Length: 120
Image 1 (cartoon, rainbow, N blue to C red):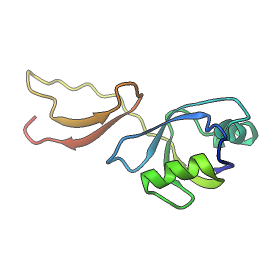
Image 2: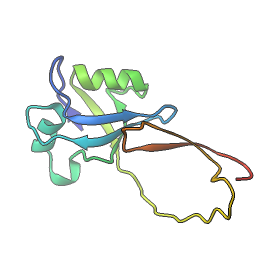
Image 3: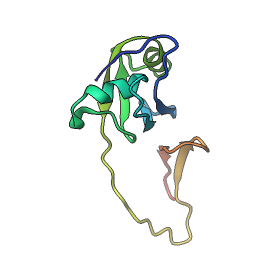
């Protein structure tokens, strides 16, 4: 996706970064064509539009989280977007701890599994 950013222009997306995950989670997108993401989506074919739930894994050839966020807000750049593969699972804990180390933002929509612990 080729995004046309410029200093002072609204991004038009709620983006979440959860280190150590090497991607930016797109929590939501504005339809406003005056914003960076809204303008791109207004011109892109349906199957190429960036959607809430997508992940940005590179911006302007950069994969460093801070650099990607800076590029998205200040200049035009090409971004690499991945669609998530979702699965719904039910875990029977049997009284044990879940055994996951997770990161999340209290007001966010994403969760990152940082580590799966041995022994539950």
